[in-house]
Image (cartoon, rainbow, N blue to C red; front, side, top):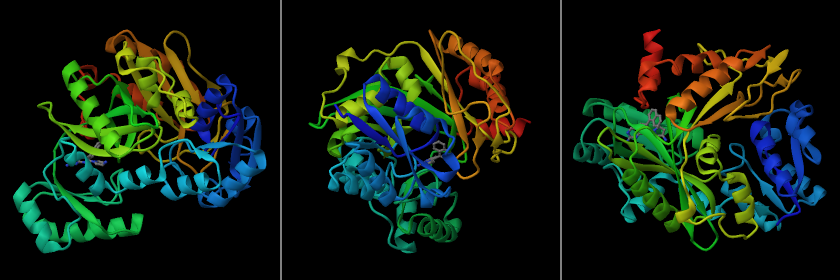
Length: 447
Ligand code: MV4
């Protein structure tokens, strides 16, 4: 195992990774920007290096500064967390080139999955269902017209270099195709420096269901069930759960096998997530693969009893998978609420000092947060203050527990998304498990 790991991240995920390292007897080196000198991850790490000014482009995204910090501290490996450099193939390559282990997949797997059109082709080649659409980015309007006519309207235009909703356009009828194609391509070019787009048949109200996989370096892998992440706003997830209220055991098995075959075909190593859209009839379709540890990983940890960050560290150090597929057992139900420092009605950032903070606790409650009384939430980064995660013997107990935990939590000095979550957890559709990617739209219209 490594003796020292550098954490190339901040906030709750840096704290989460430091905790896993500490339990494995690994020393930790943190990096921080000038805005994060008083951050919890800096306090909890064994040592910390300032890597630049507050703006992420001048600190957490600066590859040279992070590699220097790893060299100065003598770290043998770098954990990238999520966001920032986590899915940057160039960063993974530079780490390995400098003799520092990148805790994640190979640069080539990251690159492959970063090309959403290529990932879709690879899934289809494995016999994994994909929605009808173009096998390659569309070359021009004529080709787009042909493809759209073949698959039938409505269609969705997606950026090949995209993911997370940028450069996406739904096209209801042929008349709208030309202008939507132009805006989607322009948006993709601006956001990713790559105007390539492809088409798919549009599902009007799917669920977002993703499968967690763990792969060793030899192509052996296990799947750890699903997370239902249908409750999102502008492609930001707000509440996640495991298991999905929509899955049966046999559907879960089919999706797990599909996820593993995609990961195997990509030569994937370490923790990854295969995203699917699920329709009302129980048909699932490959969407994309995320090559990082995800924000919502704790719900999988709660129902499997596994520590995914420790598994990442072990796999990166060349150790075998923590359990076999036969040993994976899903127990009970878990929910995660993302607590953002935001105005809960308009979802606008609410930075500032936490004048009061009282966290929840008690049976089945887990708090992954970097918050403390007196902490100043900086305006430079995403607004996630922490994650409230619960486990119960079934969905009903998990919901009651989350309601109790949200009620117990007190945060003053900034606005938070807690009132929003309290509303969701009382909603009859949520209580009945009737969630989909349109749930929030409906809820916000009801106010
Ligand atoms: C779709 C879709 C419907 N049909 N693709 C959104 C993010 C990006 N990863 C893909 N997304 C979608 N792709 C087809 N063919 C609907 C969405 C979508 C969505 C997906 C998951 C969770 C929330 C969403 C909100 C709006 C649209």
